[in-house]
Amino acid sequence: MVRRAGGPPPGILYGVIELHHLTKRYGSTLAVHDLSFTVQPGHVTGFLGPNGAGKSTTLRLILGLDAPTSGQALVSGRRYASLRRPMREVGALLDAGAVHGGRSAYDHLLCLARTNDIGSRRVAEVLDQVGLGGVARKRVSGFSLGMKQRLGIAAALLGDPGVLMFDEPVNGLDPDGVRWIRELMRSLAAQGRTILLSSHLMSEMALTADRIVIVGRGRLVAEATVTELTARHHSLEDAYLALTAGSVQYGGAR
Amino acid sequence: MTAVFSSEWLKLRSVASTYHAMATAALPIVLGIVWTLYATGLADERGSVRAAAPEQGFLPLLQMSLAVLGVLTITSEYATGTIRTSLVAVPKRGTLLLAKSGVVGLTMFLAAHVILFVTHATSRLMAGDRYLGFNEASFADELPMLLASGLSATALALVGLGLGAVIRSTAGAIVSVIALLFVLPGIAVYLPPPWNTRVSTLLLPNLVPQIADERLSSRLGDGFLPPWAALALLFAYPVVTLAIGSYTLRRRDA
Image 1 (cartoon, each protein chain N blue to C red):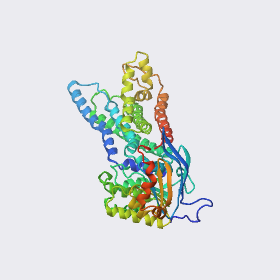
Image 2: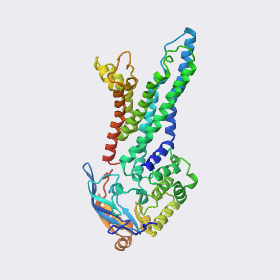
Image 3: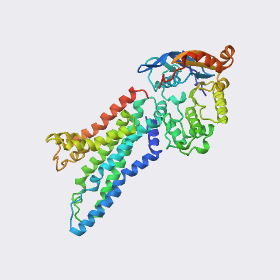
Image 4: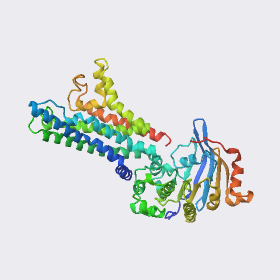
């Protein structure tokens, strides 16, 4: 499902997210500074950092929404903007609130699906998968934050992509939903997909992620497995706080 | 391109604001009936009256409603943040704006002409053989004015879309459209002659009578443009605004 027939083209790391010296400057602020790391398929990679560390900016740069000041971000060896049907290769949830409230959940997803030649049957399928099948025809303005998160996840899954990125998907979810996300992330990774997941909930991240990338003030602070981090520190939370101690600042990025 | 076009068509159809704006745009039909009833009443008392044609008198209402709809097709995406979701699905930004232009152009062209022709037909039918001032010319003589009016409303909707892409704020773009439609023509009239006519000749609402080879107004007299030049300028307005919109959409971070 994830691997294409015929296998990946030679020399290209299929499903790998690569950042090469990625830099983004907004006026006098360096939101992302010379950031390089790779995200491998088959794992959940946690993307951590204090508020304003540049996590969301990095995701926007990978998705081609913002243009990097220098450096580049590649998905499967290509720039996101050069993908012909990007939703079939990369799925992303950036901001669950970024939905026109007057549109129904079904229509919202169908609008997205059509752009990438994805059929309406797949729309119904992902709505059922995220548990919104019963409210598919309801307007999104009446949805709770948790329901909007589920809708955003449904949008990311639409194209059945091999690479998935989620920015704070656990926000607003009930305990049931938190566990559902954890299991969804782990099962998607087990299918061989690349999962990049940002969150501030350390205990949750310790349960979900295999690898961790920590950024602070737009720079790479640490890139390690959860096992490595918890071996050196008491818990993932302790490791995170120790590593980001010098890089907590606000208003670094938009 | 067809995929993005069908997505944009669904976007337009799936929100209530489209129907509200369309209902406002169709008000000239109702107002035209009221107006003709009033004029026929007067004519029955006095024998004949010189009333303005309702499809011309209420044209600004149609133009404005469709222009607002054109603005909303893009600024509603900025207001809700949906623009990022759209650009992740369609990273080719020029294609996105082109698809929006196609949908807005075709829909507004049809809507404007249906509304104008219905307003025209009902008022002429209601007038019967009374002399109301606006029902003396033959349909063939009135056709250029009707077509020019419909084209002007379509052009304004596309100008609204282009301005929306540049300005990104609903309020800002609507104010600009109103300036173009009402404020600038109003100011131009009070310039010292011959500058009032020279400037007015080039303003979008004044292109309609020039395309139909009629005078601008009793105060301004004849415009300077032959019908073909006025028509060319009417096309240039949306083309230039959309080109600037496309350029800024491609250049700026979303």
